[in-house]
Length: 378
Length: 125
Image (cartoon, rainbow over all chains, first blue to last red; front, side):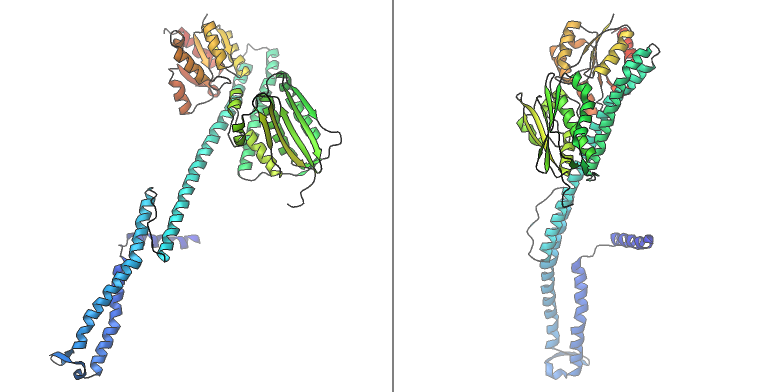
């Protein structure tokens, strides 16, 4: 069905492209010539109707007598033609040529300034075309930026996945070694499990980032007790915390009200905050997770005594792929996605993640509020 | 016994590789960051350095830079970069320091690396 519509349109375009270009002025001259036929016909009719004696006869060709009035028609018509032609050139063709050559320059990527145009329909057309070209240029740049960002994302993520992947390949090769004892194999399995968990985390980060970027974070908001959620996370991190000789404190009142939030997403956010706190706190340091109810809200705070974040890096902290200088020194292969996700998850709960940090030994503190009530709107 | 220095911040990968090289009869030392690597280069005098690029404190490029700047015998030690970075820019940046080879961790195994070390150290230089 659509084909029958498309084919004539294509034919029309091809025909137009191949037909020779006829300037509007020539077309206009033709129209003018046609327009001259009626006055000439009227003049002829008048000549037939009225006797030649009334119109000052000049000379005769046989039976036809030419009067002075007949000859006046010629220069008058010429003058009229020139006036119309001049008007056409000035009012229509010049602005059109200006716009057309401006478009040619713009297409060649030279981004010229739009020349002065009359304040009429052509002026408006010129300015409209100019703003269209500007928005096309912006679109082109946005597309290029997006392509670059996508490529950067793919590179970073591929590198992120390769690190545990190499561990897995290397350990499987080792497990297959005939010289390996069963005891050695047993000893290696927890490491393999850790690598798989790391891969799972990266894949979850990639998926969550895709959700955030396409604005399709499917939130399941319901009331839940956040205390066991945090206790589960702490349990998961316990081996690493012990390994790094850190102290983890969890402070909360016994009668804490349920929070109204997406448990899984909040869990991802807290996982990232805790994981950062562990990574960036030197041995012997303390990490404190605290829950502070206040009215219809619960304040969630993850504080550490770690290396801190310089003040000038704080505004960039939650940007995608951003990694602070201190962070890069300690954990060079971080993805720069964790805090970006945390910010978006918290923002989707109508809240805001707040960071306070001191890179002179005061550590960092990340905090946000969660509501205990279902929002009245939405 | 030929001596190999493994510079790798991932303790698990480092131990797998070091173990494999030891079993093959090499004398192996390890370092988990760039600064330690430079120290061990001077105390251990390795015949070959296997060098990771992304590491805390000082990265692999920093180690290459230092060794290159020091000159002398240290700068003659064959260096094989062992990284999961593989884009042209990273490879070119490392190759500026006349490294012997650039291997991608995920595309190789400790067995292959060990085999390569045997070939490299047995071949007349």
